[in-house]
Every structure is written in C-alpha cells, then in structure tokens.
Length: 482
RNA sequence: CGGGGCGUGGCUCAGCCUGGUAGAGCACCUGGUUCGGGACCAGGGGGUCGGAGGUUCAAAUCCUCUCGCCCCGACCA
Image (cartoon, rainbow, N blue to C red; front, side, top):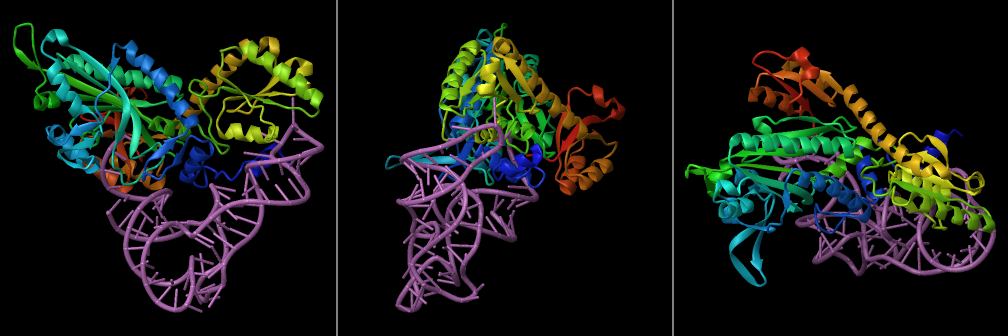
C-alpha cells in the first residue's frame, strides 16, 4: 500500500475538498476543535485552539494598530435606538439585522437598545462631546469587541450571529487626512494578512452597490478561497461627513470657524479564521501559517520498551531546553494514543511541524522533522535545532503564501467585456475575473443576476491588468463570494 | 426569507414504509499487552429516539405544530 493510500484509509472521515467543499469546511472546523455549535441559534463557541489562533491574530494586528498611532478603548454593547436612527442609510442597512433589548429585569424599557451591530452611532455621539478644537484632532481609536447581527443563514466563522472583531474609528480635520487614514489602515490590513496569515489579497475600492451602509467610500482587501469563491478579509471606510453632520461632531478651526470632522472606520473579524481554513487547508485538514499557529511544532515521543521511554523522555527535555521560547512547542506525551494516531491528529489541526523523537533519534542525537505543508522529512541534529527549526517555520510561512498565490494566479482570468465576464461564470462559477467596467450599476446588476458573481473591488494596483485598461472604464474584479 | 434535505448514546448511522417499548461501528471507562502513519484482547458504562401536543391498548415508527442544523438562492464581515 502506498503512503498516500495508507493515509486516505486512516484519515478519519474527512470529506475531500473536491467532493464537497462546504462539508469539508464544516468538518475541519469541528474536528480541528476550532469551534463548535451551541444551543444558541447561529452562535458558535470558539474553542481554546480556535481562540488561541484569534489571540495571535489580535496580538499581531493590535501591535500594528498601535504603531500607527491608535489607542484602544471600549464603548457600550447597547446602543439607544434614537442614536442608531440618526443616520438614515446606516439604520436602513442595519435595522433588518439588529437584535433589541426591550426589558431590564421585570421592567419594560422606555427606549429599546440595539445590541451593537457596529459602533459608528455610539462612538459618533461621544466624539461630538469630546471634540471641540482642531487641537483635539485627529482622534484615533480602536476597540476589540463582539458585535451581533441577526443573520438568516450562518456558518462558523464566516457568518455568525455574534462575532468578534476590531473596529477602528477616527476623526480628522480635513478630507485628505481622512482619506490618508483610510488607505493607511487598508495597507496595514494588506500587509498583516499577507505577512502573518500568508494570504494574498487584492486591495481596492468597493462599488456603490457594495459600499458600507452610511459610508462615502468603502475599501477592501479581497482573498480567494480554495473553492474559487472570494472572501472580504477586511474593510476600511471613508465615512466623509455623513456621521459628523447627524451626530454634530464639529471643531473650531484655527480661524475660529466651526467645521464638521471627517471620519473613517475600519475592521477585521473572526472571519479571518475562516479564510485561513479555506485558503490553506487540504484533504488532511488545516494547514496553519507558523506566524499565527497556536502550536508551531509538536513533539511526538515514540518508544517500544520501558528503557526507550526513559531515554526518549530525557532527550525530549533536552530538545525543549534547546528550543527555549524560540518556537511555540507542544510535547504530546499522552500514552493512550499511538504515534500514528497523533500524526493524523496534528495534521488535522494544522500544526506546521511535527518532531518525531524515538530511540533511533536519541541514538543519532537528532529529531525527525516533518513539514505539514509538503510532508518533507528531515533529520535535524539536536545541536542545530535552535537554528534550523525557526528557519523551517519561516520557510513554511513563505511556502504557504506562494501556494496560495499560485492558486490565485491560476484562478484569475481576464475578460474584455461584460459578455465575457458572464460567459466565464456561466462556464466556471469560480475564480477572479478582471474586466474593464464602465462604472454603471446595470453592468454589475446584470452580472450578478445572471451568474451570482459580484464586483469585489476596483483594484488599486492595475499594473498587471494594463491590457484591459480603457478610457472611461475602471478595472474591476468580479467573483462569486461568501 | 423562499426551495430542498436532515435531527436516534460523544461521533457516523441502521431501525420508521408494514406501531409491540432501541441497535451497530467508532469514541469512552477498567485491566493487560502495545507504541517509527489512526494497535489488540477481555470486561464495562452510557441513549427514551430534537421539543410539544395528538391518534392508539401500545409511538423512534402515524398526524399536527415547533425548534435546530445542512445545501441552493435572495441579504450581509
């Protein structure tokens, strides 16, 4: 039996991606113990392994948010209906998916509260109190929190009733400053997602049809999942003065004149975890980028005889000491599972590197490393481990990105007209299609109606698509999406 | 929210059509042998069949309602 056949037989009931991608996704999320269902409709529990992933995402992104001058704060979960209603487009966008609190204890409330679907309204209200002078600007705040949207159809991480995110909210004296902020944070997202999550993205602006409710402009980073559908991985909104006007957020400029502020908001969510799963996962389970993997390397000790056991244990301790805190290491010394069982388990959970330590390795004063991404094996001498393992992890990070980029390139096609865009999705239903867009809503609507694909963004970098640039047209990226 | 499918020990599912009071594999517990790709033997615990109501001498099985999950579509991070 070949290695591949043996693997197929033993991988416990994981649906192949090619058989049913949705099913594969749901199975991986649960078998890898990222999340599970709960008694609350549409709300999942993020289990410790999944939450550790989120904590790594938070840590790496929070660092960047602070490095660009922002401070964290926390605003109320509940938003008075009167505040939410102030911005007309905003309410219209969110009213259908608001959950409401109407009672406290045994008393009915005079005014009901929305459980925040996003915090523009409550933050706008407070900014109007805090901002008086141009000297108070810019205001650069961010909050990490949960939000709730009463979605009709839910899927773990991709769309849940309650989810976790960060939302940045800023106020600026001038339009150019706000625009700069919007693009700065968009670039932070691009760099973060590509560097830490190893997911290549297209950066661009949303069309009017896809714009955030109440925003002047919405910018996005869009990624391509392995089933050929696009996923919005982060957004950055230029709010203009819409909220400033309804919440009366004004300042006195240097001439003593009253001015409305210019605002932005930007966010990424736990949906990023879904993106990680769907961009890097394979038929054996997750493949996590080392930079965010809760466990970067797992040691599986192997022994036959009691004497081996003692020797292996002692050697594992030396390995642990040699590595110190250079890698996030887990030693699985449970003796109720065989090494083979553990191999499959950690492949399902996407641990980037497995280190096998058995009698042979002890004899060689080395460990046998196996990469999750390529399955390449390599014996690493104990003396070289502290150098070699971090290098191996770095290489896996790069390799996962390269694979994802290769997949995206292979699933991106150029179309020269609306008819070609439609023809592509009628034939394929997957991938990115880049095409010249005349800017009309009719174009978008027709593509959407006939194929289900939407205009994901107008890429800001069109250098690779110069062949289709045309006067009076924008380069646009179409895809079916989550 | 429309169309379709499914809810039976922790998991995957059989039983339902043709009512007679619940079964398999895996998982779990105990003991022993094992351990380099999901080990084996022996013994053992666990479900009242998503929920409510109805029909019946009798309901997992038939009827009604309801909740949840999955897929496809419309809406959204």
